[in-house]
Image (cartoon, rainbow, N blue to C red; front, side):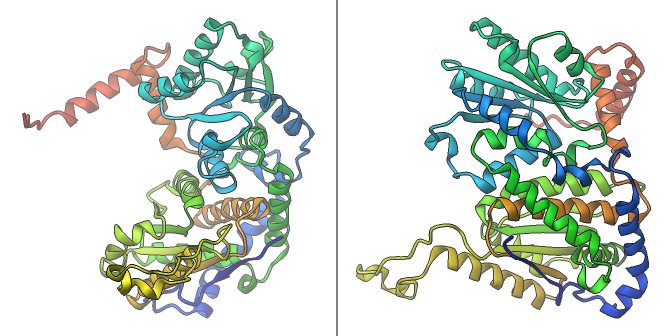
Length: 450
């Protein structure tokens, strides 16, 4: 597997804590969390992601081959049933995949915005369309409204439920009942795997494989990272143990924001995926740090002013990939008016991006702010699989060190109940009443501007 390296030299920033004191304060808790993850059976609710790297790929590849025979694939899902797919596709496919592929075009229907829903359909309706629905329960309102609409359109154009794949709970839920009563295809979303930890199961891998992404390589990279993180018991040699401790240190010292800033356009959705994983897993009981998505070099021109000269309330992780695919070099400058730019003659654009990453890191550290530098030898399927597993492991480990359950999301559930109530679902009438009460408070001080 290609190398992934972590540099912690500037990770304490302006803290007066030393690395020795960090280990004394958090080392025992980190090792206890590591044992908890290792010793808890993967069939335990929330823990199933630890076993996903060992999953057989035959069913995934067979189903992917079936999907690859369609002109277009629409996947309907939200949160962990969408962000992981977007992340994999962006990281490992051509940036304009749908414009260049000889295979199926792929569309992710996540946000239930009718403009987006219809726009996707207008682009695919003339060809054969496969519909993929991802929901453990089959009750997620945002997913199911779009699933029902797309299914209706499929049936209108002469296709059938045989053109549908649902990825859902092995035994229960609306999607499972639909699969049992129709001729659609069905795959399991393991009962012990939560949505935000599900990218390395069929929810993330099937459509990725249909588009040509190497699913076995993703799992191979994830397995290698898992084996390393679970075997290394030395706090000073295990990046997850050390980074979890550093996150907790900065939370306690008043740095409640965690900025993840990859320097690669192919990793923008990786930052989005991380934000959900981190926020939904750790934001409980008044605890947690707020994930902030940033992308280099774009956000050098939008956020770095705040990062360098704003308050000391953030902990930064910058990710740099040594290679960016085919290198492009600036040609010789011949126009007199452009002569001040001659220092760019022959410079590689990817090389410049990496120099900007180092420059931003140095500027942040000079300002006294804490930063971890993460470097990837190459952004390929094995590396992405390893990186996915690392951040899942880091998140679960940090949650355990905090004393919270990193696998539930009680705050999300309340919002779902309110939505069910407002949409008239039986049994949620009281929730609808509560929304009305809260909105009376919200609307109490109102100003009409126009």
